[in-house]
Length: 609
Image (cartoon, rainbow, N blue to C red; front, side, top):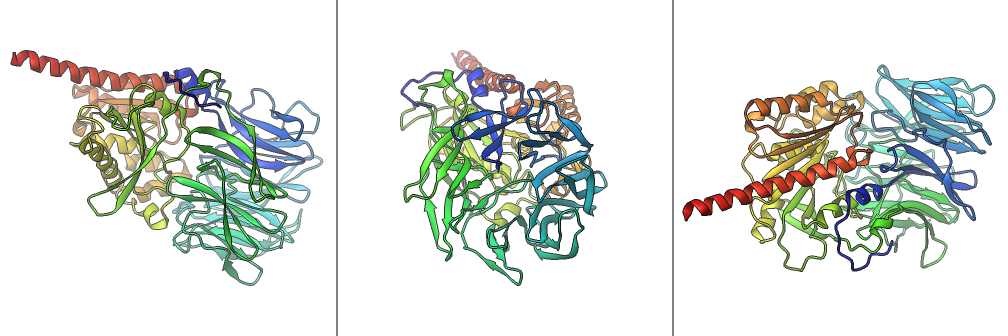
């Protein structure tokens, strides 16, 4: 996409249509495959195939949403082998044979992390009783066979030479807190034997096991304080290349691939350092060589073909795209395979961020990305929207976000805050929010807002906070106390951590238990600023009833919030078919608050005369 000199408002339609999402990139047969979600169509996910000389085309049946709810957040929703598509959607596991049109239901249930083995498909199946590692024959009449089971959680079934590796974590843990890598003897259509725990434990998160071409098992562990790559040669475990950065993403979903093996003996790894991602190559001797790429954000889906790696990348001036990188040359060759069609945004100028570091009361520093109004002068002053990311283990992403540009093109500054608990700063920083939720995250966002006020970038009455999911809880508490924020927008928000711990899907119950103990339930009587509540009625992560109750309590106190309930929309409003309505409501909310403040000022001056 060309980014020219034209300054114009980004329309809500363009902002939504440009927010196409690419995920779960993987190799299969002689091509590359990925999931493509198009909010401007129907919000469903489609498998797309790319082949050299052929380009890209939809590979899954039209109208079938390739998605799974395994562990609430899914992952590993499809696999392709010899032209046959195995996928998860609706009520179970499906197969579409080579050259066939119709999907065949293989088995009812909640499946994910689909992995092709030797003549069989491996997967994880979940029920309220726990998880199972299962296998299904790739030919004939498929039957589901159980290899292992747990009352907790399982993931990453990865077949190796006469062995099988997988991950496991308990009911009282999240995989980024305590996750184990297990190995057992295994042959296709056989059973697992001699099960051994290789890594992980109470204070260690070991994730993403993968067998290397040398027959060794590789995995990522945060035993050093950072998620780094390790290797097990059958006898002992050793570090591959220590890096002061995260070599894995926080495992909300299954099927992540943060590293891969080139056929010349090198290993390619995506590394996160604060809000930035970079790609590095680890040489056979352990030397680390950075790869010069035009991307600052890389999703945890690397797919290797020979000496080329496909990735999903973005930058502040390039929307998320699928690219193929040839690492055989000293100067990597980049071929873009897919990017959103953005005819309405062709030539539009964008706001690019600067990094801001602010010291908070405890003495530590919090980092934020500041997007000034589009086309603003160096000494800009503008209304500010502070955004608290979800998770809260997520992080600011240094990539083109057209929904942020929707606001910056209308004269707002947008500020993303990596508050305490974010990923990209090591294990200690990530887990320090436990028991402090609604306190330190709020303080960090407020400290950034106060800094911008002190620097003259904005004025009181024009500083807002918005957050989604866990960030919505942060935004609610930010206006349930005296502070710099004139209003808040809470999307898919959590309201009561104790109640949330009872209603949240079982995967996240441990998270709810560890986070709570800080600010507690958002109390209507404490809310001091105007609120906009946006929530999907089909949200299974943060149920809508809690938000309805908060809205009713506020109304009874005479401070009725603005409310937008989105029928049949789940937890991810931004990628839903109603994303445009949510953007318009948020913009109207801020403008209404500013207009009210301006009217109050005029009334005050009139009275003084």
